[in-house]
Image 1: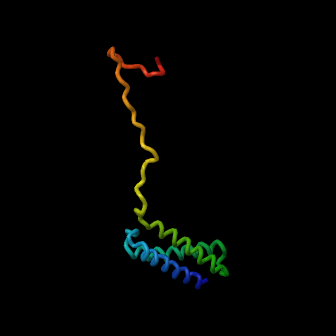
Image 2: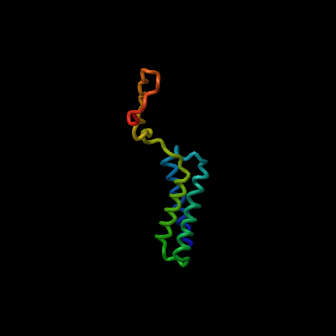
Image 3: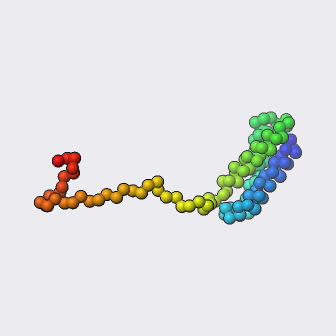
Length: 115
């Protein structure tokens, strides 16, 4: 049980460190926050998996997988959106409405379907 928790701390540290190495421009928060979020969230994930599966141990792969999933999910919440793609545009432009010509006798023209 203790080795699984220690392994989850190491795994969380590795995930947060690699995230900072690969995407430093996407983390606007201080470096210490990102480096602390990885191990703490991995430890939380490992404890959650152990509570669900039983504290007796015997599930090291599931415990480390849960630690990895929770650590990655919580680190993704710290990410700032990237600007990788082209700017979004509307699905189709709005239709332009042309004004109807006014009647020659000074009154407003009736729509075509109402006359």
